[in-house]
Image (cartoon, rainbow over all chains, first blue to last red):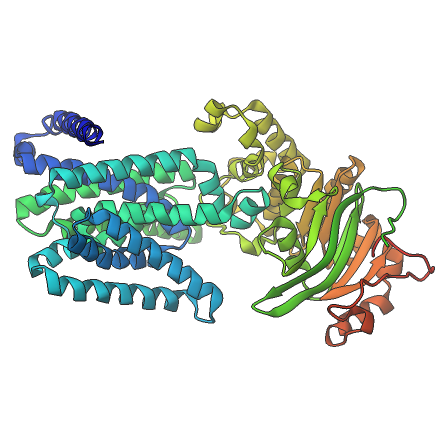
Length: 312
Length: 281
């Protein structure tokens, strides 16, 4: 067993080194003023983490936006905190705890919604704030405020090899799941009644998607932190939705927005010496406003121009 | 006692069905048999439980009590086998969704794709089995929408949207079609087209069951009418059931319960004006 774990982690290390080497080939094509920042090992780990997080957030973001799950994403991301704290207390890998409380909260929200007269927004609001409060109370007892800050706002420049491996595994699982269940997920997002009528098990799809969301959030914690991860789950998908009327294209654009925001944000934060998580989210928000203005179909400028042409 | 009208075998058989939303009863003591290869209209006022009946048939809602069978087997197996096609009211769909008309109709084939070779299921749409594209093409031709196949669905008019949803239902090539108000909010040409398409499906031996408020269309085309308002209020031919007197009776029926209809009571048999037992318990 130990040998297997050893072999696994060696394989993971090799994979990480390979991916970093691949990324560095691209980075080194850029002018020296940009690529210089990435010569440190911690920057290279941060770069790979950002690329992975940008990609899986970009993918999941399409479902979050189209299924109107923005608030649910926010809820799960906050609900992850007590799990992190408890895992820290018990000496578990923190993602296991995060996963458990994130999933429990989403199940709890569903149960309150279904069995009481409380509406879904209130159910989410009360569950996630409760979970978040529990997390803060536990952490205030056991850890320093620096720890809390890192969990809340991310610490991409301090990503350890183990956390990077976790992000890598989460990304691979998310990619595989979306690839293998592409059609059921698409149909469920578009028309759940139809999916049900075609004999798909919609509760499995529903909770599978929520688990995937939780996994993505956990994988993104180190990069942008609990508070801002929901931005990475909304903004790329919303930007892509303004730019296309095809789901596959939307996913590609969304991944593009996610990855580019993460990488550009990381670089800017180092150059300007500001918080990485915040910078990454700001770059994504900028993409959104650029799309809002200049989108060929749904952009403000071209719509105004067409209106002006019509009336002229 | 179960008596079947004519010689037609039974496509869907509902026995002792009760359904409720949050303990508020919507359907009570429903015993119904839909004959195969016939066209049946379900008629009732708003909130009468018509859509709920379809939700039970399509599995999106679990009944409190009762059983639903298709061709004498549990209906779930038929759903999985793609034998039951369902067209929801369009209000239930997110029209801003980034899919084209073609991809929407292809959605009707997703059930059948479970039986494709594994490698096809893992690859993008270009490598789908050619039979799927063929079915989609035929369905779009039938509703006269092939020319708009590449349009985003959000860019269509109300009647066109209905036709696309109908095409998705047809593309499934199922032997039972459940249509929830296929004619609501549709322009007259689209209405004619939809009724003709459904008539052709029935000619091809398929079982068509639709909820409708369109009395003239129903009078002209359907074989049977089921009047429903929480309970079954009548079953028979369009001439018998869609008389002004019957419909007026149906409209006020929501407030009263007849003794035979009372929940938990014996399965009622319906006797039509001619005094014969129709296809119902």
